Image (tube, rainbow, N blue to C red; front, top):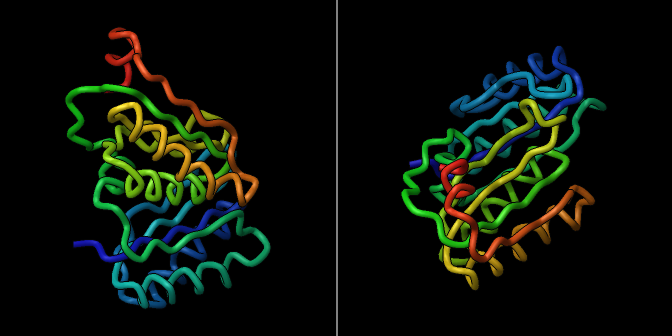
Length: 182
């Protein structure tokens, strides 16, 4: 069971790779993702116990120096977040739809975690920066009230950091739209 996840996002691919090495050498963590993303940025996503993730993120921040765009540590990550990042959710039916769109991956994953914890919703997908100009978004579903509450809570954290692009709630999506999201 994953206890904590951490992510560091860099403007430099070379510094990102160097930082990834520093992060996994700094503590006993599992490397979940280390890859270039649009537009020419790099992310490192790790998991492990809280103190190990904190140490690894600090090592990544130090190695990345001025190329760090954003970062986070989520000590008690909602279980659906990792599945949504991997596009491996088990959502079978969509009710209302909520979307949060941000300028950074780190701010979006934090927003998705907050949203998942704020209401009775299911995360459909967390899309991170590939083919969308470096932006990220999360889609989620549930009853209208829960979706509204989750979107409000999740988007607040991104907004505070100046990273929120947009948030949307679609109370009654068309059946053809639903098909494209599953």
